[in-house]
Image (cartoon, rainbow, N blue to C red; front, top):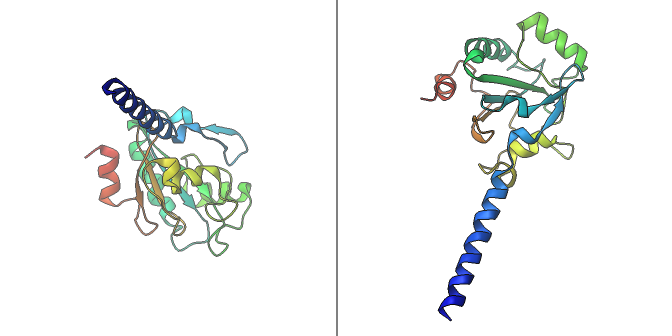
Length: 184
């Protein structure tokens, strides 16, 4: 009887460890998306880097954050940090443009050089799989969240795991963001 109980305990332990490992296999690296020019962008190419994913809009009160995002990217891009922008028209139609129009707006007005992806949905029934990952604890092993507005910031660690979320009002120059990037 002791042996049977021991075997049952071992089996249960193995089951729970394997279930936890399977959940942790879900990282940002599993995704391939289209960039703003229609090319494939593979998140696996960012392995080992800290990543900020931000949903953007060109006609929002927070649109000037593009300037701060670009400064942040330029400051830390050679230190293993990247920003990935996802334009979305989900909040009061504040990103009505085409991918080409968005790319031109970002370049001309803010000199954006960080990777920009094709326009997607970050909420609702058409939510893009990347944002399903970012907002569902069952997929990201961190927490459930909702995208509150344009320029919400999702922080991904060097292992591809979601580890922090900054609300839209948090500006890119906020010291908490720099501290996270620097590992403080």
